[in-house]
Every structure is written in structure tokens, then in C-alpha cells.
Length: 90
Image (cartoon, rainbow, N blue to C red; front, side, top):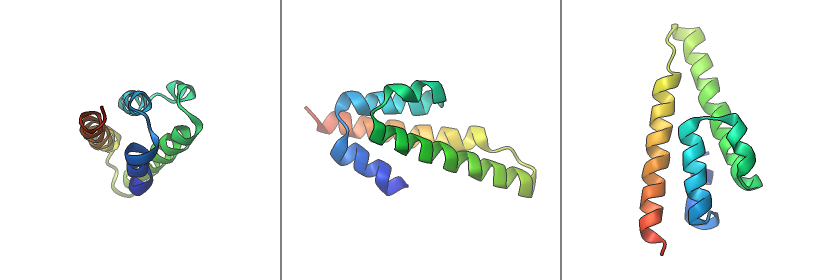
């Protein structure tokens, strides 16, 4: 999944689309996804579902609710990736 999202940032996304994707990841808002191109919707839903599945598994196994921490890690990675790409693209 990380490779796919990396490819979206490196190859497919325009600067505007990448900024929009990053903002939606930051908000973690499913309603905002409708604004994304279809290929980015797929990436976001895969990411959203994977993070929520990990959260569920950890909660049921260990009794620890890790969603805020996982979201923070995802947001940090998304922001850093966007920041790097916005510097590279004219």
C-alpha cells in the first residue's frame, strides 16, 4: 500500500491533487473523498481501511485504542511526502 501511495505522489498526482489528498488524509473525513479523482479515492479508502483494521485488531487483542497514534503517523508521512513533492515540482 505504501508503494502505491508513493507512486501516486511520484508519478500520477498533480500538485493540486496531492495537496487535496494530503488535506483529506489530515481530516480523515470520508465525506471529503468525493472531491478526489477516482484513483486517489481508491488509495485513500485502502489506507483508511488498513488503519482502521489495525486499530480494531490491536484494540481487541491488547485493549489499547491506537487510532489517534496511527492517524498521526499517517498524517505525518502524508504531509512530509507532499512537502517534498511540492518542492520538487515547479
